[in-house]
Structure formats: structure tokens, C-alpha cells
Length: 171
Image (cartoon, rainbow, N blue to C red; front, side, top):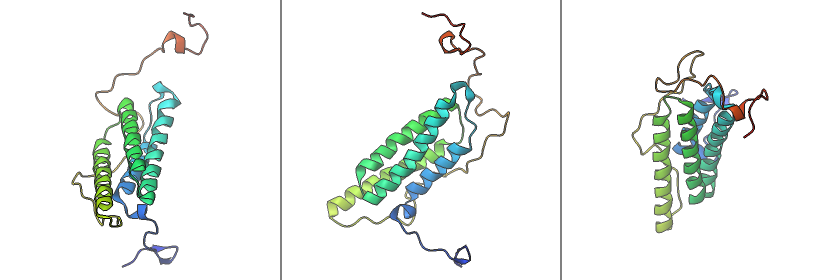
């Protein structure tokens, strides 16, 4: 049975990145990042930086698969490390299996590019994942729930230089 889109049969994937498992894993991490309640103690910086990194992982994977180039895939790995650092700082739970699966998929993609370059054969995306790590479904953290039992409690007062009310000492 074929899937229907607006009453018509769905077309097969049009671009190479749509067939690449790493792209879909990157999209899952982006969805996970966008559904989380980011802590306010860091201001908007942590949330903005985390979401930008998640977007760049998705776009770098798509670019790397489209260009069939190593540099974009290596950049995606770097952006993934930045995203993982943001998740760690925010105290989120449940993202590590997805990130581990994506790292495995990116490494497999790099390995396939190296093999294709050595053989001179054109690269074709795989039919299924080559890594065995299970991917968790992302769920938003309900309001008032703790993200992680290891997380430090929020500070009651900011550093004197970071206060906005103007009574901070110059120094």
C-alpha cells in the first residue's frame, strides 16, 4: 500500500539526503531540541545556541550528502558536539542514544565516501542503518518536572556584574 499525500500517491524521495539515515536522525535531534524547555538561568543564549547547532547539523548532513563531500560531514560532527554540550549544560535527559546513533551514521557515511573514492564507484545511500543503537522517541519535559536529578539547583542571585538593576559594583 502506498502512502497518500493530498490524495495522490507519495513520490519516492527526490534528493539523496532524504534517503540517508543520518539526515533523519539529525532531524530527530532537531525535533528533540525544539520541544525541550530550556533553562532560563542561562538566558536565551543557551537555547539559541542549541537550536542553531541542531539546525546546522541537519543542513550540514544534507549538504554533505548532496555534495558527496567529507568536509560538510565533518562539520556536522563538530556541530553535533556543540549541540551535545548545550544539552549537557541544560541538563536534558534522553538525547544520548540519538546522538550516539547519529555519530555512528556519520562515521558510516564517511567510511562509505572513502570506499567510493578509493574504488572510483559512485556513492549510493544505504537502504538501512548500519549501527545497532536504539533511537528513543523525544518527549517534551512537562512543566515543573525535573530534567535530570543530577542537575544543580538554580542560583538565587546572579553574579554582581550580571545584575540588571544597576547596584552592581564596578571592579
